[in-house]
Amino acid sequence: MTILDIQRLSIAFGGVRAVDEVSLSVAAGMVFSIIGPNGAGKTSLFNLISGLYPPLDGRVCLAGADVTGLPPDHLARRGLSRTFQNLQIFFRMSVLENVMVGCHRHERTGILADLLHLPKVARQNRASRERAQAALARVGLAGDAERAAAALPYGALKRLEIARALTTEPRVLLLDEPAAGCNAVETAEVASVIRGIAGDGVTVVLVEHDMRLVMNISDRIHVLANGRTLAEGSAAEVRTNPAVIETYLGVETPSREAVRARA
Amino acid sequence: MSVRKLLDHRLAMIAVVATIVFVLPAWFPSAYYYRIAALVFIYALAALGLNLLMGFAGQVSLGHAGFMGIGAYAVAIAPAHFAWPGWLGLLAGAALSGIVALAVGRPILRLKGHYLAVATLGLGLLVAIVFTNETRWTGGPDGMTVARLTLFGRTLSSAQSWYWISALAFVAAATLALNLVDSPTGRALRAIHDSEIAARVLGVDVGQKKLAIFVVSAVYASVAGSFFSLLNGHVTPDVSGFLRSIELVAMVVLGGTGSVLGSLVGAAVLVVLPQALTVVHEYETMALGLVIMAFMILLRHGVVPTLAARVGVRWT
Image 1: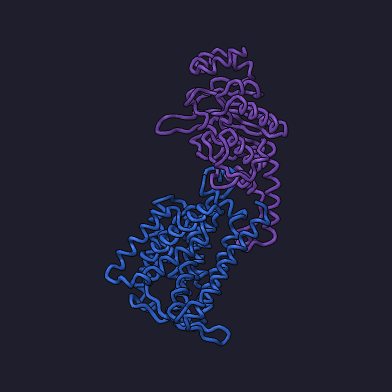
Image 2: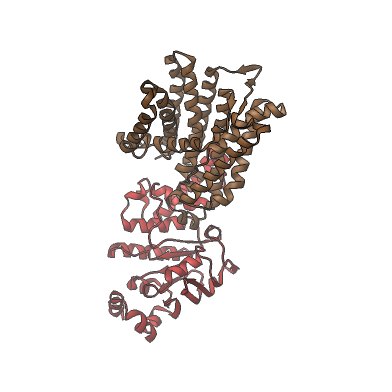
């Protein structure tokens, strides 16, 4: 079953087509990676899918419903959330509170009830806290719940963003370079977290530069270059695609090595 | 940070403020002191409202005295033109402020930073102009007399009664504000303050949350405005003037953005200081400016958060 279907999606910035008629279709439960050289339009595509940019043209369907142009909070309530390449942490809150914000769409209180601290507020807080604790455990941060978010190291913040997005209970989770800036150990942790998420039936769409990670965990890989689709296929297919090797792997040295090592 | 610990903490702060409220009058030699203290709590109430907007959601308003003005004139106009009791005027003013905030907030809260500041500035100026020009209703620039409030057959005219009313109102308002910190709405607002974009992808309706807190903060300011004119027995358009709005922002920043106790401290400093500085009469304004500058340089995150961090307690 197709959970996320994108048809001829485009956006332009000052005459440059950052995303140019990209179509892709993601089946439920898979790990789907989008790769491409810097400036290929990967993050722009994510911003389009998650509703941060209105598309110039094209269509986005989530679980069969047309969601083109819906704002991000509506999409979150329909089961699509994401993380960010450049961290967007709530730095003045604790680790647990950061994740509890992800519970917002399940919380049923208004500002009046909250001001008066009605009994249902305490109940909601308790439920959200439990939900957030469970999400933190899934990414291996259970022991850091009460710490200030600002006190966590970079790799842990990446996982904190994943936990936060998970508490929205997404059907589709977009991860924008979850392993960027992570060392080998942290990258391995991220890989096992992603596998766990996919194992629970959440569809993962991944933008990532770490080729070893991508080749290891992806069911399908979509290659972008200059805003356009270059190729799509399994890891093995993409790795041996001549167009991909020429355009993409020729540009990025570390990726080429990583791919060669596996080829 | 267990629930119990937070609850204790919250009650502790309210208890400290309530104790001050009850003990302070022991040192008041005259009614004049009651009046100054009442003014402190009234300004603290308005500043607390503004602080909800600035400290929680990170949005600024340079027109909050406009809502003070609506409350202040509501308790003057209601008895004078409609023969309503004063308390009904207060409620009507609060409702009207909420409605104005709801109507105006929707378009202007989309703006950010300086643009929002200037838009709210315009709102404040607009309200002040209405009060100045609608002479038939408001008495124009000279203002109008405010009928004394009568509650349960007793007419409240002494500074002493207004001290108790405004102090207890502040304690209640502070309790509500502290309730918000660890609630779903409070978390959403704090999230918006740190990263609007992350809050949105987590399902937070950013526009609706900002609007809700804007309405609450307008109601706080309106009630403070009503108390202000009932205490004075007279109201002029100055209550909603630009300088008053700036004063409120200064109280929030000086006391500590995001700090409930800070609103009280900021109001206390900016109300009491000009009174205390009358001893150096010719240089009063200059001394006031210098003292405010010294506060901001030495305690740059505001009095309460800076001192709390120095002592090592979680600031509220």
